[in-house]
Amino acid sequence: MSFSYLVKRLLGMLPLLLGVSLILFGVLHLAPGGPLDVYADNPSVTTEALEQMKRAFGLDKPLPVQYVSWVSAFFQGEWGFSIRTAQPVVQEVLDRVPATLMLGGTAFVLALLIAIPLGVLSATRRYSGVDYFITLLSFLGISMPVFWLALMLQLVFAVQWHVLPSAGMQTIGDGSFLDLARHLVLPAFILAFASVAGWSRYMRASMVEVLGQDYVRTARAKGVPDRRVTYGHAFRNALIPVVTVVALDLASILSGAVITETIFAWPGLGRLFIDSMNGRDYPVLMALLMVGSFALIISNLIADLAYAVIDPRIRYD
Image 1 (spheres, helix red, strand yellow):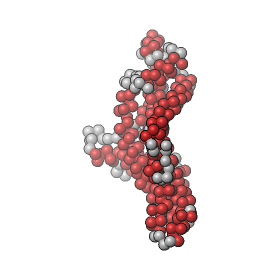
Image 2: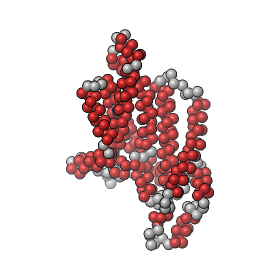
Image 3: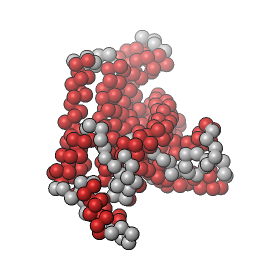
Image 4: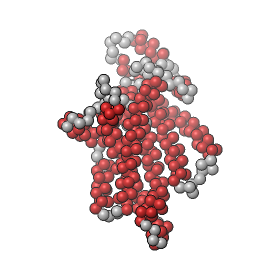
């Protein structure tokens, strides 16, 4: 990949992010209600106070003016203030990023280490008992609701067996690594589980297709050992379509696993999104949605880079 191509891709992100911001801003602000509705039933907040808040957050201006003001400030790093907590939005988001990266990164690595070998094993043992067993587990994983599995594991491991904590990131008064790891086990497993089932199926399908190619049959006819044919000739080419799926899922994992973080009270971006949505905190919601969009665009760029690394025939000029 040439440097000029990379610069073009990075510059191309700007109009894309601008278009995404326009759509997100319109959808949020055209929805029924408003960000100050949460104070409407509070008797301690007077009408004058609501008017002052409306002026302070710029909500008294026409919608196009609000958008232009917001987008120009956002791209300069001024993300405004949270309506719910009055804290800077940048700080609110940055405070949650480490927890989400820790959970999402652990789940991503775990899913990758399990799904790829399972897919390869299923493809190389096609129509065997191992293949049927892995296929059964994959379909169970795809069809099983994540929230249901999370609640069941909480019931078994936290409530009945008392071997793992049910929620949170750490025990009060205990900041040890072991305590953090114990809190991480269940949410990371749930988050990884949702990806393993799908990724292993993609890996199996891709591997089966590549193993049926003429160059693989030729290698076998020449007496090349099966292991070398599988991992030396077929594996890299089979990875290319899987990279696309993994890259798209990477964005969703790292931008905040909403259901998992909510069930396990994990203090990451997903839980912040739910709290902000319940509180109609538009500045924080816009920031989180833009972070998610940016993560998706970056993950697609990483996928393109990975294509060139996996297959040297792919070049970007």
